[in-house]
Length: 281
Figure 1 (cartoon, rainbow, N blue to C red):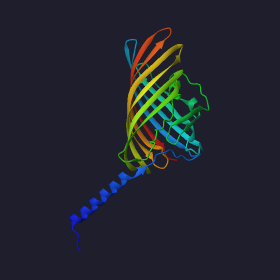
Figure 2: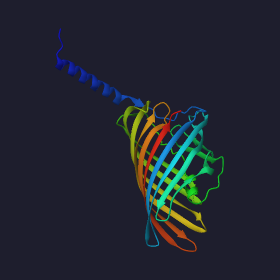
Figure 3: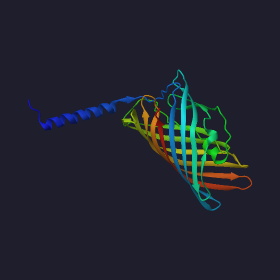
Figure 4: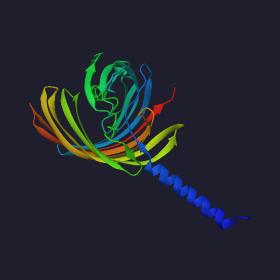
């Protein structure tokens, strides 16, 4: 019996639909499943554009931050939580504005370790500085920031097309004080894809950020608050939960109030574009 071209096309179409339906029904349980002693290394490139108003004058600045960071799991606990040792292999910041055009290599920060404990869903359980480092000025602001922020996983299995939300509060030391950040995101599982030779899930997100804090710097007390938006797309290794590639963007409007010998309020706008890649051995 001969089969017509039309019949063959219909069969192929039906097969494609069945395949897509099967993929759509497949559920994925996303967790961090890292290997003890294995070295995971990320390369980050971050572009920052900022504008500040100081004493009636607008100061615009652009900067580029390059960093390579390693994560080494030292303990995998029975509840699925992981103890990580985090340290930078490379960190530099280039700044260009009306007052300067310079690049700073943060040599003193290289190899300085922080111990981070996360749950299997990526929640920060504890953070402890192992190696202290003395940095000042711009180097201190850059070097004390968290080197790696991991996304929270959905608490339940998800299918392609499904959405979930997460809220991640965090507190870090910066500029002689403590800065609290709250990130709220709406995530969507877009597809199951092979990316960089790894079986991945492609996920997009949009969200909001709030920051608040206070501290003391150069003899003056400061208070900071701000709000912003964030968006991005990343590919998660299904086997380990690690992002193998992420492209993100956020915009922030903030105000810093200084009190001391001279009181002033400094409003600022910041736009950040970031790219992260998990390096292969």
